[in-house]
Structures are given as structure tokens and as C-alpha cells.
Image (cartoon, rainbow, N blue to C red; front, top):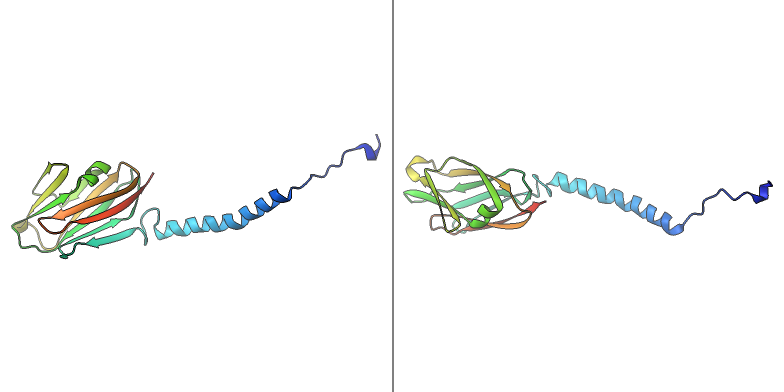
Length: 167
């Protein structure tokens, strides 16, 4: 067999495949760095971008929560009640929070609580608590997506806040 009869062992290179590989290497590293910085900043869980707080218009109710949650991962919502001139505090939690989250611990425990018309009511005697009253509610999301929740105390304006739950 002569040298000329052997096939050329070189591989034919495709310019479009080489350009694709080059672009994946160039932009892939930037994409991965963007994901890492987003995670550190709190886009996917706890962090600077995730922590949020809201206050009602009369400044009697504050809520601290995380904008971003993970499905089946427990987190806490902090509700702070400023001093109200009432004999008891009635905190009402809307049905969206009840339907989309599994409620865990409620600290401090309410003096009484009941559910009526898809709303949970937590009742605290004002004489038994110090002002401001800070409630911690442990919640575990049951469904992914953007979820709007409402919280209200007595006849004060309610607060509506949204959380995005990652699957």
C-alpha cells in the first residue's frame, strides 16, 4: 500500500462550530458569574435583594419578609404592631397566606385564635403584651409562583405584600 492511498488523518474543522464554542466559553463564564453574584446578593434566598419590609399608612403595622422563597423551605415573617389604643390586638391574616403556605410556629402564642371566612384571626390582650408587639410566624410555601398576601390589625389599614416562590 502506497502512502498516497492512505486517507488524510486530519479532521475537517467547521468554522460555525468553532465560533459557537468560542461564544459559549466567552459568554458562559459571564453568565455563571452573574448567577453566582445574584445568589450572593439574595435573589434566590436570603440576602440584600431578598429582605423587604412594608409599613401601613398609619405606621401601626410593620412587616419584614423575604421577597424570594424556595418551595418547601421554611422562613419567617416578622409582624410588628406599634402601640394602639385598644384592649386587644386582632391580627387578621388573609386566605392567600393560608392557602399557599403551611403555617408553623407563631411566637408569641396568641391568647386565642380562630378562622372565619378563609381568614385567620390571632387575638392578643393588650394588657398582656409589651408595646411594640413583635410576632414571628414560620411559613413553608406549598406552591411555586408569585403570591400576594395580606395582614391587618384591628381596623387599621392592611398591608399587602408579595413573595416569589421558586420551585
